[in-house]
Length: 110
Image 1: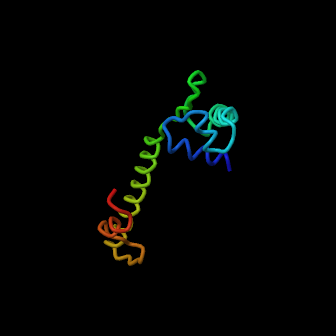
Image 2 (image 1 turned 135 degrees about the horizontal axis):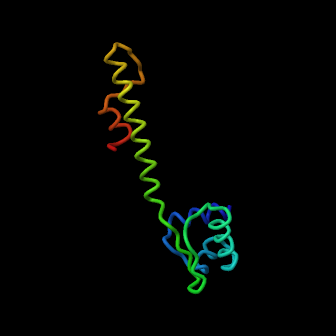
Image 3 (image 1 turned 30 degrees about the vertical axis):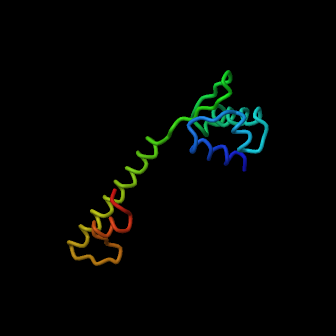
């Protein structure tokens, strides 16, 4: 549970002090630092750096990775829509065929 909360904190904060992280996780600051370093260095579950002098953890932003993931999903959806449109033009009738307008209504404009 504490690890999941630490991962969540890494998504919400750009940086956080050991004291603040410890308070957030309900553990002493030195344990928060130790857990963060383990998850960053040994387990590679978070990206960032630890400033031991200032007692602050800096989390790296993974926005670019999420945007790439989103673009890949958009590409798959568009390819599927093109296939289904092609099937409809050839006379295949399927309840799964959505027009581009319907895709925008369901999934929002990409």
